[in-house]
Image (tube, rainbow, N blue to C red; front, side, top):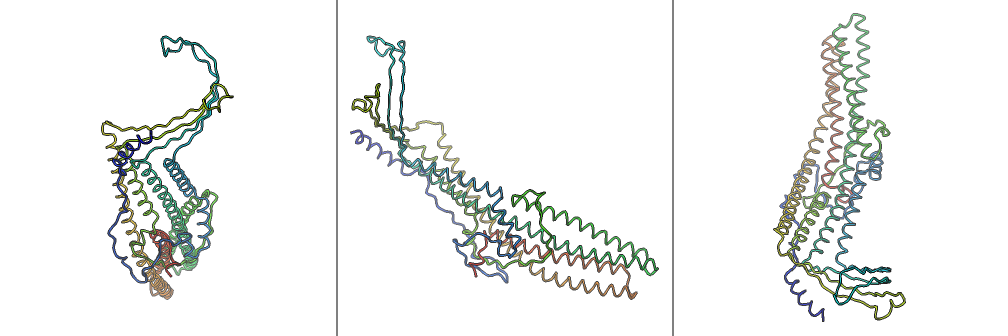
Length: 473
C-alpha cells in the first residue's frame, strides 16, 4: 500500500528531472589535411593501437636504453603519476558505489538505567527509575533514487578523471623519456666537441713547441710566439667551459633516473651517432598519438559531468530507506515474534530558496568546462606547432650538416696550404692562426650539428606522442 502511494510521486519526479546536465560531445577542430613535408619525409599510416613503449630503441644506443629502463623503474616523477592514477581509480570506485544500495547490520547489546526524573510523557503516569537490558539486532537498507542523474554524472566525471590520469601517466613516461634522451644526446655531443678541442689543443701545443724552437733560433718573432700561446690558452678555456656544461647534463640525467648526482657518472663517448628516420602521419593521427591531448579531452568530459552534478541540485533529492530487526530486553526472547520490528520509508528534499547558490554552482561548472575546452584547443594547436617545427628543423639541420662537413674539409685544406706558405716564407703566421681557428670552429660546428640533429629527432618523436617506426614500414 505504501509502495502504491509512493510510485506516482516518484514518476512525477522522474519526468521533471529528465537527466540534468548537457550530453557530452567531443570537440571537433578544423585541422589541416597534412603536414608540410619536405624530402626525405613521407606520410606514415600508424594506428591508435600501435605500441608507445620503448621508442628510444630506434636510436640503437645501448647506453641510452639502459638509462631509460632505469628511469622508468626509479623515477620519483613517474612514481608520483602512478600514485595519482591509483587515487583516481579509487575515487571512481568510491563514486560508483553510490549507484547501489547501502546495506548495514547493527547489533546493540546494552544494560541501562532510566532516570526517574526524566520529563513526563503523561501527567497521570509518574516516572520510575528502572534498570534493564536492551538487546537489538537489525539490518538497514538505504538507496538514493538518482532521478536527476546526479550520481550518474558524478560517476561519468570520475571515469573521465581516471582516464585522464591514465593519459597523464603515459604523458609523464613520454616526457621523462624525452628529457632523458635530450640530456643524453647533448652530453654525447659535448663529448664529441671535447674530443675536437682535445685534439686541437694537442696540435696547438706541438705548434707552440715548434714556434718556441724557431724563436730561440731567431727564425720566428716574439709576436708569432705570443699569438700561438694566446690561441692555445683560449682553446683551453673553451675546454673547461665545455666540461662544466657536460657535468650539468650528467647531473640532470642523475635526477631523471632517480640517482644521486654525486654518485652518478657516464664515461666519455665521442662517437658520432646518426638520427633515425621518423615517419609522419596526418593531424588526425596526432590526436590519437599524443597522451597530453587525450588527457585534455578527458578533462573536458570530467568538466562536462560536473555541470550535470551541479544541475541536479535543482531537483528533489529522494532517499529510500528500510529496516528490519529484533529488539528485546531479554536475550532469551530476542528471536521471538513479538521482538520483530521493521520500517519502510521515503525522504524527499527540495530546495526552495538558497540565495542563488545552486545557479552559481552551475555557472562555476560551466566556466570550468569553457576553460577545459580552451585548454584542449591550446594543446592541439601547440602539438601541431611542435610537429611542424620538428619537420622543418630536422630538414634544415640535415642540409646544414652536409654543408658543415664540406666546410670542414675546405677549412682543413686551407690550413694545410697556409701552413705550407708560412713555412716557405710566403705568408705571415697570423694567416696560419686564422686558418687554424677557422678549422677548429668548423670542426666544432660539425659535431654540434650532429648533436642537434639527434636532439631534434627526440623532440619530433615527443611531439608525435611516441614512435611508430616499425608500424609505418
